[in-house]
Image 1 (tube, one colour):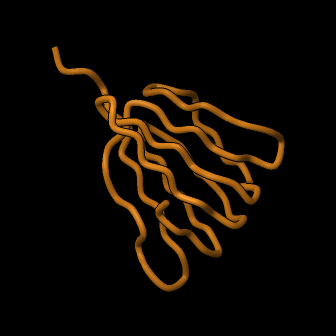
Image 2 (cartoon, rainbow, N blue to C red):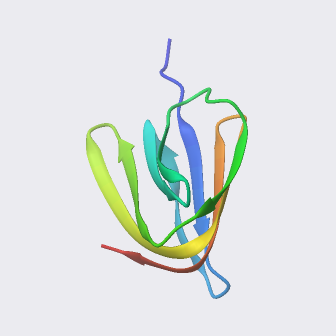
Image 3 (cartoon, rainbow, N blue to C red):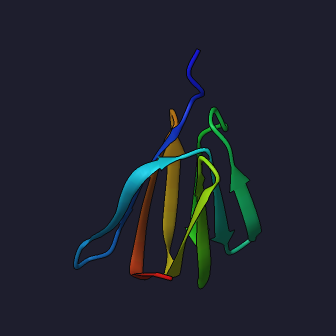
Length: 87
């Protein structure tokens, strides 16, 4: 049986910065760091300035973000942010 994945989309007002799958996402929320695995409960949270860490099959992508929000439901992570830069 295939391992479940999270579908991740990161967009800014100007462009789609990232779209792909993940085994784990680390989020810089305003309440502190938040880790999300597949089948996490639905959540909406505000982002702080920081780095989103996306892990997929032992490959790590890091995207610096400046505020925004995350909506996670049914293994879909939609992230809308003021600005994002792949580091």
